[in-house]
Length: 241
Ligand code: GLP
Image 1 (cartoon, rainbow, N blue to C red):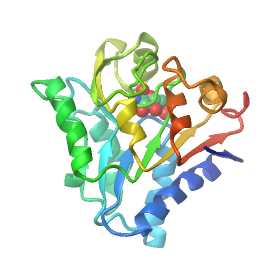
Image 2: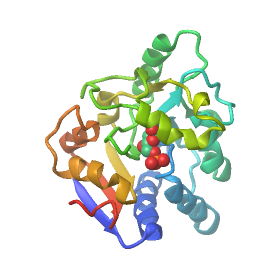
Image 3: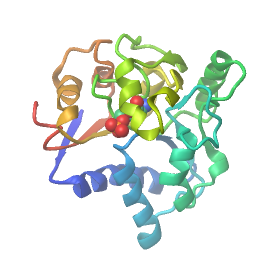
Image 4: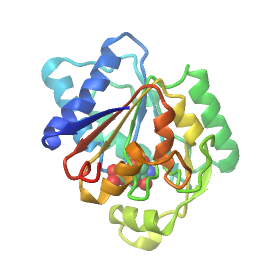
């Protein structure tokens, strides 16, 4: 696991964008793993800048999202699919029809989870997965207690995650209680992973991620078992290392 402690938010965003640039320039047909939440937004903005000013191209790439709320169709204003379009896809030359998310409106969410896992495998797996981390160490929506081998599935959100995500909704009651989430076993199959976190509130989770025992109590610790992970943090998020 490589740890990059960035001087400021812009330097962190550049370090994450560098990982994407390497994969995109390595050849056609890159499969990107995209994440929502506020953590990756600065890196997406840097990628948009490189696309506009430096000709970085996403043509031919495909993407899979980590997770989606159960009950929200792809065009819902708070859906993760909509979020990723607004924060990245609509501003670069990535064909939005090749950006796939779990279908939150599927009639049978459990069946949709299986289909999604199979779709990632059929695409040849993810070349580079970007991740944020929750204050309780969750990645995607794999809350503490998730099996380290878990696959894409329907998960119940914890109260702390519902509260943390309520800022994106008009009312806390509107936050969905369930999500479709790639499992820890699914995420681990990505060939490269870059996790980014900023701020003091992530310091405990980052310390566990880097130095804690591998355990379902802190789901992100599973990344210690992965051969190619880069963790990009600011000084506040690194303050307990
Ligand atoms: C959500 C998402 C995660 C994200 C986490 C942290 O629960 N499902 O993918 O990493 O929140 O979000 P933020 O980056 O906004 O702190």
